[in-house]
Length: 398
Ligand SMILES: [Zn+2]
Ligand SMILES: [Zn+2]
Image 1: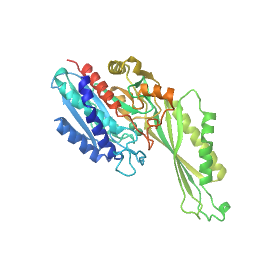
Image 2: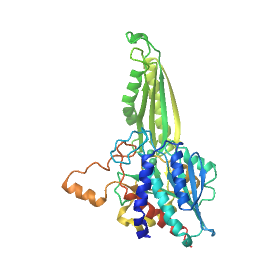
Image 3: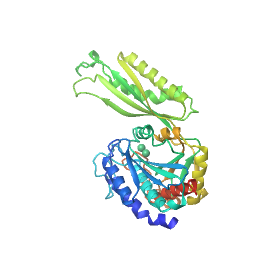
Image 4: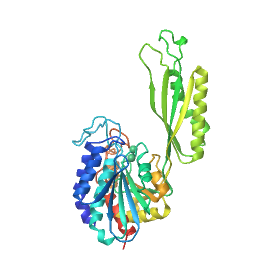
């Protein structure tokens, strides 16, 4: 199997670059869907269009057995890419900055290999190419449409350039954070900028709110619990000579338990109200739940860990803490037993050690997910395929 996967490398790179060049937003992955379908037809694999622009492919051995699902997400982000390779995004303002391009290539590579090993398995495998992960909508739709009904287990991966290529992180229990988006809207009154004291500005109150936010959180939230509160959007203003009557501030909050969530939201509300009261304006706070924690099932995790150790060696399979990013995979794992691994896509460990000794680490793979400079080491993809394949062959063994 190893030699087959090594041979697959150029195929994986070709696919990943193709996806990378033409990124599409959540729910709009039409061309991405067509490319996947094209590839599945080349490989002679049965598939169905699902969700908004998802594709569910299937390898059915026609023998009684378990059903395994392997999931990859498809969407890109509204980010202008700042990399200089020749497969840089051609869709202006859009970028595969989360590495979902690599996830799709890995899944197609896995299909290609597993299809050759069909005779060694029982049951079936569903390959979920899922749209709209970044907006937390795609997984729910696949569940609603019944694609998870007969599934016994689901596995997935997320690449991370901050983890060395050739290593994976695998968390016990909670693997990724839960998230909400909280919008704070300040309402004031327009006025001429020559007489600000006669109007009710909303920019200064909103700035005070953002500036003081981290202090309030520090003072009010138990620092034993893990969480992140970040202001990611600030929108205001009509024109240079008009006092701004409305300012919207959007926060992204991440947490691991309901208690922390409730406390965060209630402190944010209290703080926003106190600012509004002081400046004599109105405020509305809207909390929108995104998704819950992705929780790895112990049994599936053990099996996926074993498969990973076979491929990478035990020193490269790391029991890790949960990641602060979120995944709508959480909805799938609420329905079926599952496990997600974090696939290292940064420097090779050997290179990193060498660089530490001789010169500073260059920054090629040190830009995080959702950065306009995010780069991933394409070498990681073959490890993804090998781990998925190893797991599937063992899980569906005859
Ligand atoms: Zn993302
Ligand atoms: Zn992602």
